[in-house]
Amino acid sequence: MLEAIENLALANYLRRDIFAYPIVNALHILSLGMLVTSALLMDARVLGAGRQVPLGAAIAVLRPVAIGALGVAVITGALLFSVRPSEYVGNPVFLTKLGLIGLALANAGFFVLGRRHFSPASAMTRISAAASILFWILALFAGRAIAFFGGS
Image 1 (cartoon, helix red, strand yellow):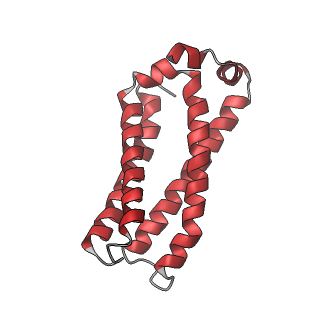
Image 2 (cartoon, one colour; image 1 turned 60 degrees about the vertical axis):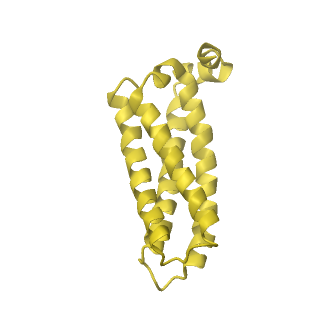
Image 3 (cartoon, one colour; image 1 turned 60 degrees about the horizontal axis):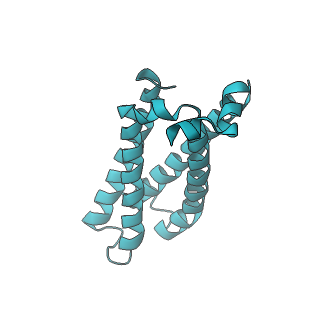
């Protein structure tokens, strides 16, 4: 399976073309920046920052940005993965990054579903926001550390 991914025409193109991989990598970094910034701003608002902006209004503006950025990050991440899938699958830091992103997304799902049951000031909502901040920041560190532990 991994060999099939590595032999895809698009993966070969990304390895050969002088501009393709750096462009995809830059788009991945930009989309992650948008995603994490949006998530951190929503979390900070839940934790009490920026009280002059209603929580619902902040989420209404930031959630679509986060969702769009997540889509771009997933697509560009898959393209980057296709260049060296065997190397990434064997990299514990890469797997940690994926796990942290999974935790952050599951936590976001909990927040969305739990909003009906918990007030913005509830302990569970605040714990969820704090956990989100932790997961996203650790995922960024793990993503950067991949280059130092067998990937690039």
